[in-house]
Length: 138
Image (cartoon, rainbow, N blue to C red; front, side, top):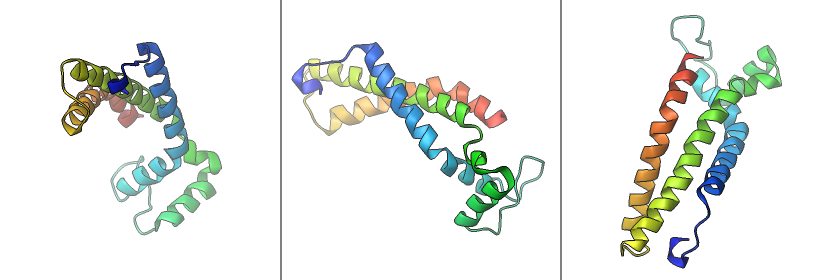
Protein backbone atom coordinates (compact mmCIF):
# COMPACT_ATOMS: atom_id res chain seq x y z
CA UNK A 1 0.00 0.00 0.00
CA UNK A 2 1.63 3.27 -1.12
CA UNK A 3 0.22 5.24 1.83
CA UNK A 4 2.28 3.10 4.24
CA UNK A 5 5.59 3.64 2.43
CA UNK A 6 6.38 -0.06 1.86
CA UNK A 7 7.12 -1.14 -1.70
CA UNK A 8 8.14 -4.56 -2.92
CA UNK A 9 11.15 -4.73 -5.25
CA UNK A 10 10.28 -4.72 -8.98
CA UNK A 11 11.33 -8.34 -9.52
CA UNK A 12 8.95 -9.49 -6.77
CA UNK A 13 6.11 -7.42 -8.26
CA UNK A 14 6.77 -8.86 -11.72
CA UNK A 15 6.98 -12.39 -10.31
CA UNK A 16 3.72 -12.06 -8.36
CA UNK A 17 1.91 -10.52 -11.31
CA UNK A 18 3.20 -13.20 -13.65
CA UNK A 19 2.23 -15.98 -11.26
CA UNK A 20 -1.30 -14.64 -10.88
CA UNK A 21 -1.59 -14.30 -14.66
CA UNK A 22 -0.44 -17.85 -15.29
CA UNK A 23 -2.91 -19.29 -12.78
CA UNK A 24 -5.75 -17.23 -14.24
CA UNK A 25 -4.95 -18.34 -17.79
CA UNK A 26 -4.68 -21.99 -16.78
CA UNK A 27 -7.98 -21.96 -14.90
CA UNK A 28 -9.91 -19.88 -17.44
CA UNK A 29 -8.59 -21.42 -20.68
CA UNK A 30 -11.66 -23.68 -21.17
CA UNK A 31 -13.92 -20.61 -21.07
CA UNK A 32 -11.67 -18.84 -23.57
CA UNK A 33 -11.75 -21.84 -25.92
CA UNK A 34 -15.56 -21.93 -25.82
CA UNK A 35 -15.78 -18.14 -26.31
CA UNK A 36 -13.52 -18.25 -29.36
CA UNK A 37 -15.42 -21.19 -30.87
CA UNK A 38 -18.74 -19.39 -30.47
CA UNK A 39 -17.32 -16.13 -31.86
CA UNK A 40 -15.90 -17.84 -34.94
CA UNK A 41 -18.94 -20.05 -35.60
CA UNK A 42 -20.30 -19.78 -39.10
CA UNK A 43 -17.20 -18.22 -40.58
CA UNK A 44 -15.40 -19.40 -43.66
CA UNK A 45 -12.31 -21.54 -43.50
CA UNK A 46 -10.94 -24.55 -41.69
CA UNK A 47 -10.33 -22.72 -38.41
CA UNK A 48 -14.03 -22.10 -37.82
CA UNK A 49 -16.14 -24.55 -35.87
CA UNK A 50 -19.77 -25.48 -36.37
CA UNK A 51 -21.23 -24.49 -33.01
CA UNK A 52 -23.58 -21.72 -34.15
CA UNK A 53 -26.78 -23.46 -33.01
CA UNK A 54 -25.41 -24.87 -29.76
CA UNK A 55 -25.83 -23.64 -26.22
CA UNK A 56 -22.83 -23.02 -23.99
CA UNK A 57 -22.89 -26.40 -22.24
CA UNK A 58 -23.33 -28.13 -25.61
CA UNK A 59 -20.20 -26.42 -26.95
CA UNK A 60 -18.26 -27.73 -23.92
CA UNK A 61 -19.59 -31.25 -24.58
CA UNK A 62 -18.78 -31.07 -28.30
CA UNK A 63 -15.18 -30.07 -27.60
CA UNK A 64 -14.75 -32.85 -25.03
CA UNK A 65 -16.34 -35.48 -27.28
CA UNK A 66 -14.30 -34.52 -30.35
CA UNK A 67 -10.97 -33.52 -28.78
CA UNK A 68 -11.04 -35.04 -25.32
CA UNK A 69 -10.90 -33.17 -22.03
CA UNK A 70 -7.46 -31.78 -22.91
CA UNK A 71 -9.07 -30.04 -25.89
CA UNK A 72 -10.39 -27.48 -23.41
CA UNK A 73 -6.79 -26.53 -22.70
CA UNK A 74 -5.54 -26.29 -26.28
CA UNK A 75 -3.57 -23.08 -26.74
CA UNK A 76 -2.88 -22.79 -23.02
CA UNK A 77 0.86 -22.00 -23.34
CA UNK A 78 0.21 -18.98 -25.56
CA UNK A 79 -2.66 -17.79 -23.35
CA UNK A 80 -0.49 -18.21 -20.26
CA UNK A 81 2.36 -16.25 -21.81
CA UNK A 82 -0.07 -13.50 -22.80
CA UNK A 83 -1.56 -13.31 -19.34
CA UNK A 84 1.83 -13.48 -17.60
CA UNK A 85 3.20 -10.56 -19.59
CA UNK A 86 0.14 -8.39 -19.05
CA UNK A 87 -0.42 -8.99 -15.33
CA UNK A 88 3.27 -8.80 -14.45
CA UNK A 89 3.68 -5.40 -16.10
CA UNK A 90 0.27 -4.17 -14.89
CA UNK A 91 0.97 -4.98 -11.24
CA UNK A 92 4.47 -3.53 -11.20
CA UNK A 93 3.58 -0.36 -13.14
CA UNK A 94 0.40 0.24 -11.15
CA UNK A 95 2.25 0.03 -7.84
CA UNK A 96 5.17 2.17 -9.02
CA UNK A 97 2.84 4.89 -10.32
CA UNK A 98 0.80 4.86 -7.10
CA UNK A 99 3.97 5.38 -5.09
CA UNK A 100 5.15 8.18 -7.39
CA UNK A 101 1.80 9.96 -7.19
CA UNK A 102 1.71 9.58 -3.42
CA UNK A 103 5.23 11.02 -3.18
CA UNK A 104 4.10 13.92 -5.39
CA UNK A 105 1.37 14.74 -2.88
CA UNK A 106 -1.67 13.03 -4.41
CA UNK A 107 -3.34 11.22 -1.54
CA UNK A 108 -5.17 7.92 -1.48
CA UNK A 109 -8.30 8.16 -3.58
CA UNK A 110 -9.97 7.75 -6.93
CA UNK A 111 -7.73 10.12 -8.89
CA UNK A 112 -4.51 8.40 -7.80
CA UNK A 113 -5.86 4.88 -8.23
CA UNK A 114 -7.49 5.56 -11.60
CA UNK A 115 -4.35 7.24 -12.92
CA UNK A 116 -2.15 4.37 -11.76
CA UNK A 117 -4.52 1.80 -13.24
CA UNK A 118 -4.59 3.64 -16.56
CA UNK A 119 -0.80 3.82 -16.79
CA UNK A 120 -0.39 0.19 -15.67
CA UNK A 121 -2.95 -1.01 -18.21
CA UNK A 122 -1.34 1.06 -20.96
CA UNK A 123 2.09 -0.45 -20.32
CA UNK A 124 0.59 -3.94 -19.94
CA UNK A 125 -1.21 -3.64 -23.26
CA UNK A 126 1.90 -2.38 -25.05
CA UNK A 127 3.92 -5.34 -23.79
CA UNK A 128 1.12 -7.85 -24.44
CA UNK A 129 0.29 -6.73 -27.99
CA UNK A 130 2.98 -8.79 -29.78
CA UNK A 131 1.80 -11.88 -27.90
CA UNK A 132 -1.79 -11.15 -29.00
CA UNK A 133 -0.63 -11.04 -32.62
CA UNK A 134 1.00 -14.47 -32.23
CA UNK A 135 -2.06 -15.82 -30.39
CA UNK A 136 -4.38 -14.68 -33.18
CA UNK A 137 -2.25 -16.40 -35.83
CA UNK A 138 -1.86 -19.71 -33.97
